[in-house]
Figure 1: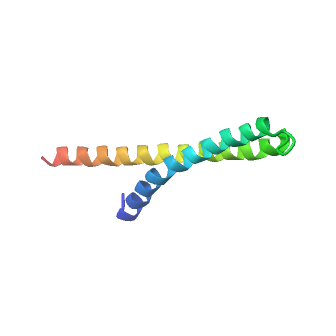
Figure 2: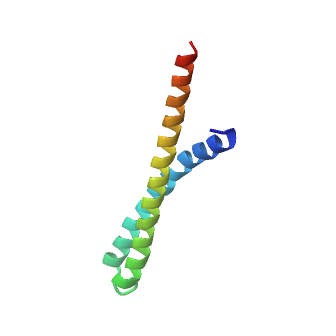
Amino acid sequence: MTKRRKLLTWLGLFFSLPAAGYAGVSFIFYSWLSAAEPERWPPERAGVWAFGALALAILFFGLFVYCLVSLIREANRRYREEQKAT
């Protein structure tokens, strides 16, 4: 893994989890808006925003898992190489 890819993977790991949490909270918030003020936020309008936020939460969580697995695999690969060298 190159230094650039490793840096991008670490940045993806650190930023994707808070982004997934924010999008998840947004999903809950938009769902709540529909229930709290149905005349201002009809279910059709709130549903578009809520499911958009849910899609982003799933996407960012998937990115977090991908970055985590990539970094673990790289660490395991390096460890095996060090064990072979000794």
